[in-house]
Image 1 (cartoon, rainbow, N blue to C red):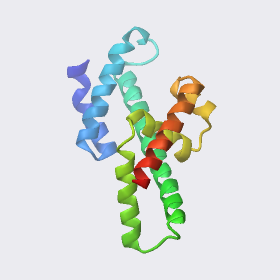
Image 2: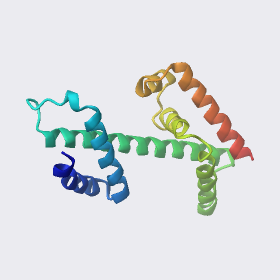
Image 3: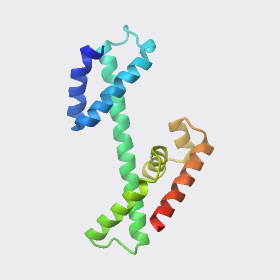
Image 4: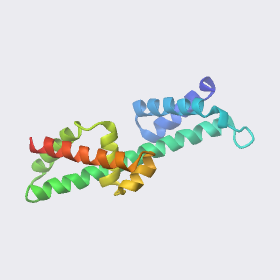
Amino acid sequence: MYRSHLAGLFGFLVYRTGDRVLAEDLAAETFTRALDKRKRFDRGRASEKTWLYAIALNLLRDHVRHVDAEARAMERVETLVAVAAGGAGTAVEFVERRDVLDRALTVLSPEERDTIALRYGAELTIPEIADVTGEERTTVDGRVYRALRKLRAELNA
């Protein structure tokens, strides 16, 4: 399956993303998921190729949603930072604030960044985030609390 479909799948993902590295990651994840879910594959419902492309397309959509949610979260936090700093300011100040925010976000774990993006970018509630991630509400709530505490500490440092 890998030898038969890798070239076409990779080409599709490069075309859709415009990013060869991201396309490599998505292709690898596609084949990993296909291997994990191979027992669910039903030749009567779809061809092997159709099944693989459906997996790849779902991964691509998940990636786009994640990036969009993170961008919305960044915009909201930037707005909050701008308001706290006393207004929009100049373009240079905006870039500086964005830089500060980007650096502050590096202190968060990937799970914390995802949770913050879902909470403030996608504007999901704690129960909705728990449903999306399959985690307990208390875990999500604690993660949001810790992430915000880390961001405040980093931004005030």
